Amino acid sequence: MIRAFALCALLALINASYADVELTGSAGFDQRYFLQDALYQPQERSYSSAFLMPEIYTQWNDGADTLVVKPFYRIDEHDDERTHGDIREFQWSHYADSWETRVGIGKVFWGQTESLHLVDIINQTDLVESVDGEVKLGQPMVNISYFSDYGMFSFYALPYFRERTFQGENGRLRPPDAIGEAVYESDDEEQNLDFAIRWQSSIGEWELGLSAFSGTTREPELFTTVTQDGEPVIFPFYAQIDQVGIDVLKVSGAWLLKLESIYRSGQSEDFAALVTGFEYTKHGILSSNYGLGFLAEYQYDERDNNFFAVGQNDLMVGLRIIANDIAGTEVLFGLVQDLEESSTYSGFIEASSRLTANWSWKLNGYFFSSEDIEDPFYFLRRDDYVQFSLEYYF
Image (cartoon, rainbow, N blue to C red):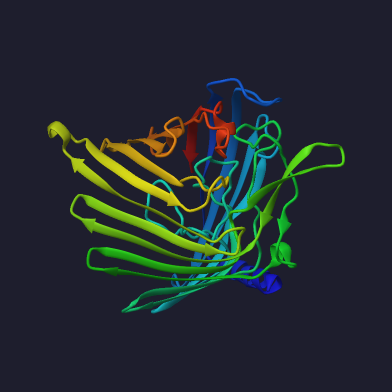
């Protein structure tokens, strides 16, 4: 199937060579500063990095066929694992009246909530890029979608698995021990063929989605072993899972009501998880152009002491400030509080704005607190950081 996937992409590229090609993209510089000295050595307090992400786009057959190529590369000052490249997209798409096909390396997003994306399972998380898990690696896929009066039905065949990225020895936000080689439940390892299906539809004020996935989990379990030299090593274990999910969005005036929920089987324990809440936006604050968005979401996960079970019984509250200016300025503040342990919480700030038509800036900050040594994220307690990014779009 890998050969068929490569052949389709090659044929699309050959056809695209006869069409007009657009080159756009972005490049940028990030400066990340940690507010406290690291728990582990060798680690720094200041990390600089730069990235380049060009995008090549073309279409032919009167727009019925398109090709998108989006490579990515980052160079990091200290962390060798964060110096990395990826093909975010290399995808040929064909559009017809009631269906479309996508073949190649692509990105798919499922979900509605702000604080967690439980149902979003197609792409692997690029964890060295962002601690919030929002940045994804490109996923090889064949996708067929059918549009009907009853909604959109999508089928995915995923012939190759991408391992989650982790920070290196010199990088911060990493577990206390080194990350070893991945272990797979499937004998086919990363070449296990995964499948997913999804139905989504708009019904009045409701946006509904139902999904199912069968294959290699994108969320590994982490187990520690000791090498022959007596050094502890963490190895990610990728099990075969089955997952069903539902996501719901209701738009009612200034209110957005959101829910995501999953049930997963196949890992060390079967479990259910959900996140649900609302966002209310008020525009024209004090007769100005500013708007305020108030967010609250409850997170629940049946798993205990699991590194990736980040919202077992937690509450997220947030405030979004919308300037409604030509620069698109927005600021989001958020706090996630563990409802069972008052000392365990995290906070974040996300701000962005355009400087010119080609330049923009971003400011992100993440803050962690935990006094419970049993907390899987206890090791992050000294990794509060802020990051300033300057990006150029061409």
